[in-house]
Length: 556
Image (tube, rainbow, N blue to C red; front, side, top):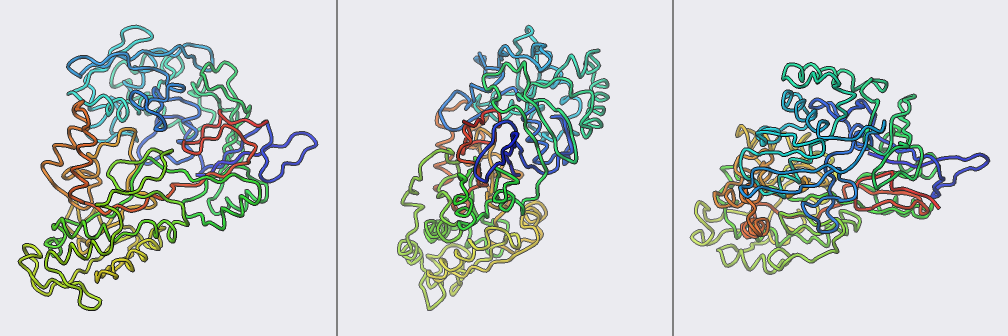
């Protein structure tokens, strides 16, 4: 997804690297939905950008500074005022905010969202079985500014507020449902169907009132024009009067910037150092943006042939010690990446912290660990010479050879090729198997025990997993979880993972992290930028460590 800012005032011609006041042109993928509620598979990156500008969620989040529930207190529409002693009931108070037509935002706007989602969860893009709305037994209106939510069981409030309530978006009940049709499940189903049908129409009747800083003005030749809301009463009042969302192909970004067609762009993770320098020489600030995520290679514990090797913790730890993250960052990611050392993500503005000794690169330590367990390097091969020390099921003369599966021509192939060379220094053979879709292969093995002839897998690039606000591990390392492609299973790990979100146990994340890191169920890789942001040096208010918030932009 790309973002641009460009404008012309009478008699002036903008130059590359200089923002002109008045209009921000944000390049996006083609926008196909103009409402914040969509069906599964029907939402593009451009749709999500537009929805976030027009309709503010109940809670906004940030990871830069410690706040309760990681809330962005400037932009959130509400606050959690109380959690009951039994951990089941949350009291939430709305702030004094209004829709663009001046009507106050009330709890009835929250109730409309709840009724629509509850009656149509199977046709809602945000639904995953066992998650919201399944985690909520009731939503009760106390008064126009206060409501309560009761959960099906106690959860860690950080997880529930950060991950579950993140989906809640106030909807203008006085516009969308003035006759209270959604008060019954059948009525909510009819209204939801009307919304889904109307969403692709930029002139649909539901767009009359919005809660965000901009409202829809027009759609022309695919470009969406937004204008600042005069009555917007949020603390982040827009400083630029007009926003344009303009579909732009990714491969046109650099040229469009340097030829003055675009002024601000979100560039892909594969952007090279030469491309960055060219833009900087043209007067742009170019900064990496890191997602709230982690990068890793999954061990395939479903591969019965290599399982005797993979289930040896000392082998997994030795492989980690062979990963020279400094070299990978320099040679594979053009010097822009952060070391990956943990199952928990690093804060976006954190400085580069060295990995602990048990994870840091150390070729000799890795070889020594293998030697202590009966392995010797014979020429180019690391061979098991004492099977009693090597581990159960490992026959004499077994060689350490592994196959890694990755998506063909993906960004990380060059990283895996360098990793192959590093493993070879210890006599370990790494074969790279490039397939059309690594996620499909890994998922097929995890679910059906087919296509399991791989030992390591790289699910996606540039990141293996992007977390919601609260980085619990139930999706990636819990037994049989959706993204646990390697089949890692440990009852104690499952118990610790459950504690990270099912109870408010102090230090539950740290305890879970330490346990996982001691067992090394994955190999940590550097975390490359998810994207780069390029913008004129005179454009103020751009946060390099956060999603684009155009209402914060300004020019001198």
